[in-house]
Image 1 (cartoon, rainbow over the protein chains, first blue to last red):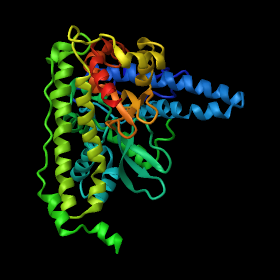
Image 2: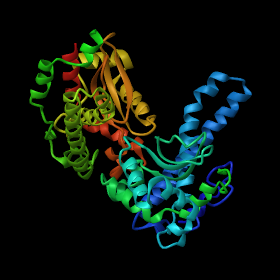
Image 3: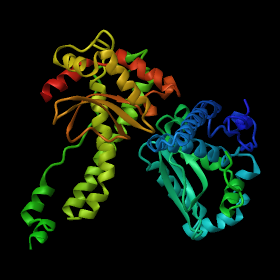
Image 4: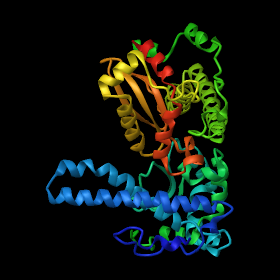
Length: 217
Length: 221
């Protein structure tokens, strides 16, 4: 099983393969191959399928000039579209621990900004961890950059709400139970602790510098 | 003048608040073994769900109430309000799970046996049949986006039955009385059903104890 099978998941077509590593086991021991397999091939796939269905219905409503139907579809598009966006960003901001991209040195500008804002990388990590563990219910934690002020911030989004508006996602951590439960059970702190070893700092740096382009899904 | 009186309780009132002995919440025992709900819910799920998840809600609720008491003693209204989300989440988690364990039972001890009496009458007149109500609840459960619960409730104002979903650990409060709850958090089914939550929603009816729902319904009449 190869993660680069992202190509062609969505009928509208993924423009690029997000993941450079090949095996689902590549993120072990921090995220098990079984979790990755179900998370990618079942959960993410379901968001993609449901987004396609909602989008098709929306097109139909648009053609029929049915505004009520369009508005009624908004939540399905937000939830499933958000699920597709968030997971696509997530896979791309993870990398096997032994890759050079997993080293902080891959993000010189970003780590500089992190130290300037949070004092040090360790303090940032502590704060981000606290935010992730404080999340009530399903959702995501994000390091974001305000596009207007260039300020970094740590935020959470509930359920599958994506990061939108003035905020640009730098990297995200999935805090839905399906992201860790088969391996960590209720011990989400260990999942969060482990994930710092597999953050793709090269991707994070590109997003921080605004040169990762628009997410093409 | 009157505003000041509201914001600044009298010394007597403050003493009353601080001197009251606060009740510590504890994890309720289950009336059945962890493995007793198999094959609908695995023993491993039940053990983690009860001894870890529910226990954490109980512990965190006690912590939040401790902090809340301090804020009350300090006359810190801001502090009290900022603690509300914690109380809601962990208090809701404790309430919801307590109701949930009660409205489950092993097969052979009432689990899956259809409702009777006035609750059955109300279900039949509202939904047509118990099977139709189950379908209604399963659609509601499957439609939850994120973590949450599905409930059969009684509307206090109209007396009518209703199926509702609540996000995260928000408990059923206000005009609704909870009769029967189904946990739709992933931790409630993931180790056994993974992403196939529809299967979990269909199997759980084998261990639903309608007697508990009936008792809650009767108490609400």
